[in-house]
Image (cartoon, rainbow, N blue to C red; front, side, top):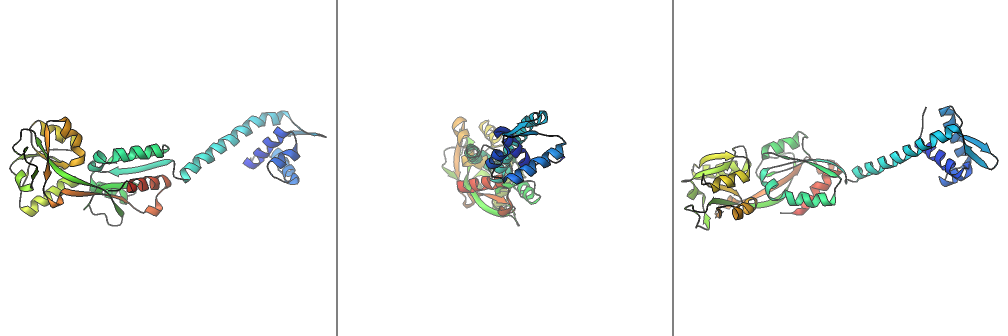
Length: 296
C-alpha cells in the first residue's frame, strides 16, 4: 500500500466538502485527476471510502476510520516541513564550538547570550580546550568553529580576528610590587609564579618571551582555571600573568592588585577559525557570523 500526502490531502478536502468537485477545486486539481486519485487510493487500501450520491459523497465506515488518521499524518507532515525549514534557514540545529580558556572567560558569555536570544532553536556544544587541540579538532571535523590564541599554527583553516586582550600581572595587595603601575618581565623573575598549565598558549607565550630574554620564571603552582589562579595569588602563594579582562571582577572582589605588564607582547589576539566557511551548516554559519560581527 502506497499513500501519498497529496492523496490524503485530497481525501480530507472531499470529506470536509462532501463533494469531489468542491474538494478538487479547493486544491486546484482537475476533476478528472481528482476522481482518478481517489480511485487509486481506494484500490490501494482495498476498500471504498465514499458513497457516491447524486448530490455529493458520504464517507463509508472505512472513510470515517481513515479521516482522523489522515488529518494526523498531514499535521505531522506540516510540522516536519516547518522544522526542517528552520534547519535549512539556519535558525535551528547543533553547533560544535571549541574555545580556549581566555575567550571563554572573557568574551564568549556575553556573545553567546546575545546569540541565544536571537536564535533560541540553535544548540551549542561548547568545549574548552587548549589552542593546539582546538586547531586539530577543526582539522579532524570534530568542531565546526574554534577560537584560540594567535600564533597557533592553523594552516589550511580560514582564520579571522575575534578579539584582543591585554595581559596584566596580579599580586597580593601587600606584595612588594603592589605599588607599581607597570612592570617588565624581568621584575617578575625573583618571585614565585602561579600559572596555567604548560600545554596552554598563554604559558607558551610567556615561556617564549623568557627564552628570548634569557630569563627563568619560578612556576610554583600550575592550574587550569583563572579563578583558581586568582585565589592562590590572594593567599600569597605567588604572582601571576593573566588576561586583564578575565580577572577584572576578581581584582575587585579579592585582595589582589592588578598591574600593567609593560611588554610589547602583552597585547594578545584571539582568532576564530573554520575549515571552510562556505561548507558550514546553516546554524554554524549563523554563529560564526555573529561572533565575527562582535568584533575586536
